[in-house]
Image (cartoon, rainbow over all chains, first blue to last red):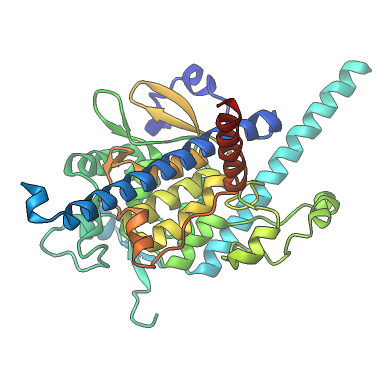
Length: 67
Length: 52
Length: 259
């Protein structure tokens, strides 16, 4: 097995990728990640909307107001 | 690969279609299940031996 | 279909021939160019590529993917490519049809007889062989991605997702990959100096939001909001969206009562 001769057994075995060991904890950890994603997406939408609003506001200013 | 071509080993591989891919995956899954069953049997056997 | 070649090349010579490349294009160019030059060279020089990837087609590639133990790009000072990266490169050479990539992504193995009762309970559709279902009906049913029932080979699933991000179009990328954000199975990821634990949903999120992953620069994906603006995409509906709304509502009323 030449291609993975540099993989240390101890290193790769330090991580366990077995699913369903503690279903409740695994679901809870996912929920936290998903909530962060939702928050991030909503923040991005709010920022985009704020930017749109700012562009609109500037467009509506008269030349005098812009002085 | 040139030496393989000279030795008559084809450098073309039959292109797989969806059917072939699906069959392959089913086969691999059966193999995986059988392997895990053997593991469980081995464990049962070892436990039995210990009890005996 | 008839115009498609019946044979694939066993090695990468045709793929790496800049002048003579005549295979399928991805995003208007030779798919090999989606990987950086140094990475391409290290892949084709690696033992894994030479001994394990030679002569694979889209079906036999599954044998190798079934043996994958981790995802990752390159490792060590020499920048050695992981098997995951080599197989991704193989996919760029094969450019499999979309239905094959979707099979990798959503393959569902036959259920054991012993597990039958469990399945009937939830009344999931029995023909669920990985095909995309109507979103509205899907909503009321069990989320097969969250149940870990789709993409039975999780590392193959990640491989297909990585390929989709590199080779498909933005709308397809979002609609195909986002349902996997509920697949929270664990995966190992090889980094420069060790292994870390991550999750399928995390890897999918990385593919959708990061500009670099697994030693590969990802081309800039059109932002989701931009595609929603031109009605190419519906807003994503997270299974937790209602819960978040409730929480925000609680937070607001909380502030009001406090005042």
